[in-house]
Image 1: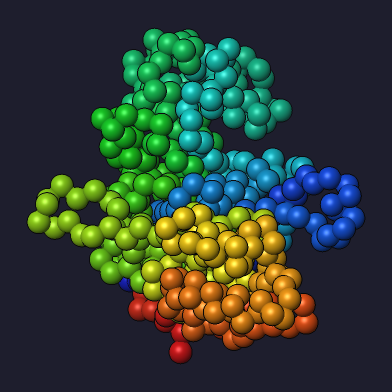
Image 2: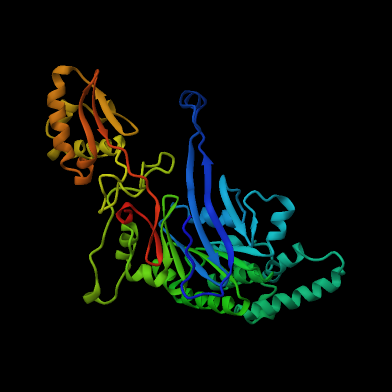
Length: 431
């Protein structure tokens, strides 16, 4: 793994190292299907994520819904057990930690969830909810009455610190009596009352009104400076990440495709997916607005991942070596046949899409030799409608046995490449 530390920070120390993190979730399928396909079907929620987090740093994990960023955060704080890889927190690999070890880690790392309304027990008073971690981790040598007095003072102090005032009045309130912003302040207070070293913030302001959002972000920055905390800030909002983060990692379909200083990424994004994300950020000045880059199609299935680069089916800068495969042709064919104006008599010549199959680099369908020439001609015409890189990636179009097949050349090996002060996972930057 290529290491990337914050430029100019010679005194920073590493608090968290994630190496080739993998989190796969099994898919429930019928027994007969399991017997036939033999291989276990899994959702590749996180599939080889690596990064380093320095003490006192705020690193943003950014991507659209379903890219795996929340799963990374939960795996880091060990709410879920990784399928593979390492999570090294202060020189300890906690990826497979159990029971008491995880319990002890809770004093050092905490998480703030997206929805403050669901994060608080509606039947527990706010003061009790904030102080609950103190009770869980209290020392048995202290008397209950003495600890209760001390815990109340600590909770009231923390409520003042996060702006949850007047604290004496709010202490005995229930979550239903508080506004959304107050609930989020209570959640923050509960997360930091044990003074953790690492705080994972999972969409911590996404559920709040815009008027409250900036205040909560400012509060997080103040708490970071006061308590020397380190944040892993998970968000889909690039504008928020730009405001608060020192570095940003862009995720797509379980992988980090670009990571580096936030100023560098916003000024000059390298990966085509990063460019597409930044192009849709609203700009209030009409003279500075840029053309939006909208990737075609939908995000691929996380169970059956694309070959090569996972963004290649949607990438506007795709190369012939990025990982074209049989199902890419079937997607193109399906799109063609779904448009009556373009399809014409092609469904009669090629047959319905259900007659076609795809396996790895190859797509095809059964046909007789007499029809092969006509089908091959139409295949080439349909390929010409798709990306030029797809045509260049085609190795063979013709008859093999009883099948007309389209076979693509294999993809080049995709690797992380150092580009200036950031790391990019894209063939555009590989020699």
